[in-house]
Image (cartoon, rainbow, N blue to C red; front, side, top):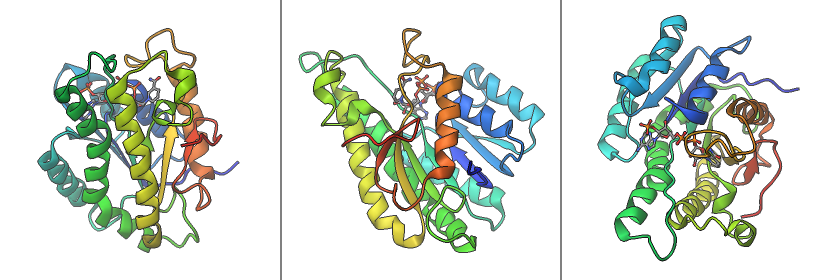
Length: 256
Ligand code: NDP
C-alpha cells in the first residue's frame, strides 16, 4: 500500500473531532511528518488542552491560533508558518474546520447562511490563497512526478450532504446552510484543481463518513478512529486522476 510521506502538514479545526484525530494519527505514524501545524481558534484555552498535551510529547507538532472565518487571522497564520518552515514548503493543507447548524428552509436566516459560507467555503478559499506560495514551494522542491499528497495538496473536508445528486435520499436532514456551503466548497475544489494543477498542486474534496463527533453526534455510523484511518489511507493513493473530485473515506467517488 502507498505510504503518506508528506513532510509538512497543516490542518484547520484541529482541537477536537476529526481534526484532532487526524493530528493524533499523523503523529503516531512510523514516519511522521517533520512539521504538523495544528491550527485552532483558541490553542491556549480549555478547548486546546488535548492539543497542548500532544505538543508536549511531540516536538514536531506546532499549535497555531487560527479562526478560518477571520481573513486577517489567516494571513497572520500563513506568516507564522512560513517563518517556522524556514525556506521549506507546505506539502499538505487540510481544510477541516466546519460548522453545522440544524436549520431548515423555513427557519434559516441570512446571518446563518453567511456564517456557514464564511466558515465552510470562504475559509478554505482564503486558506488556499494565503498558503499558495508555500504549497507551490513544496511542489517545486519535490522530485515526484504528477500530483500527490506527498508533493503538494489541498484537501477540503466536505460531505455527501453537499452533493446535489445525492440530496434527495438524505433530505430528511435539510440543514440548508450546511448543504449550500458545502456544495460551494465542492465547486471551489473543482475550480482549485483546474487552477492550481499547473503549479503541481492536487486538490480533492473528501467526505469522512457519518462520524461520532460533536457534529456527527453519537448516533453516527463511524468512530472517529475508523474515519480517520480511512482518510489517511486514501491520501497516499490520490493522484492527478482524482484532482477536482469528491471521494469518501474509503476512496469511493461521490457524484457532485
Ligand atoms: P466538530 O464539530 O466535532 O469539530 C469542528 C471543528 O471545527 C472544531 O475544531 C471547531 O473548533 C472547528 N471550527 C469551527 N469553526 C471554526 C472556525 N471559524 N475557525 C477555526 N476552526 C473552526 O466537527 P467534525 O470533527 O465532525 O467535522 C470536521 C469536518 O468534517 C467538518 O468540515 C465537517 O463538515 C466534516 N464532516 C463531518 C461529518 C461528521 O459526521 N462528523 C460528516 C461529513 C463531514 P472550536 O472547538 O473552536 O469550535
